[in-house]
Amino acid sequence: MSRKGAKLAATVLATAAITAALPAASAFAINQVSCNNNEFVKVTWHHGGGKNIDQCFANAGTYNSSFGPDAWVVKISTGNNRVQWLGDNRWQPAAPINKWTSFTWPNHPGGVRIAAIRIV
Image (cartoon, rainbow, N blue to C red; front, side, top):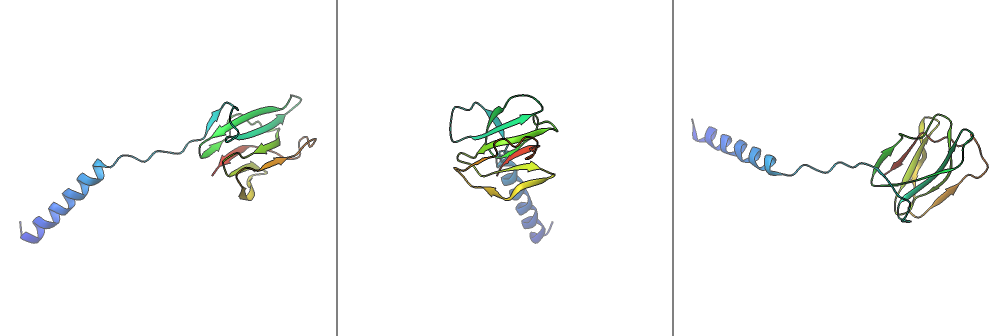
């Protein structure tokens, strides 16, 4: 092997060793949490003929598992987060709602749909 080839092989091996030694990055995943901290996102939503439901979330990501096809949002409090909701097949608002903001839609049954919530 030539000197140039040996140097290239050593560089490739060193790069591979460094890459293998680096820890994997943590994946962001939204979590449903208890509503005991005003820094969390709090979503009050309603569906069908039922009563209002409060759910709180932490960490960046998207949550859509419990909202049904007839769910509508009553209130979103962002806490220490920037937030969007999925309604009418698009993320709303176009620019995320700022930290420490509350949006309220009282007495608006079926009007402001929610299919998912996203912390950005």
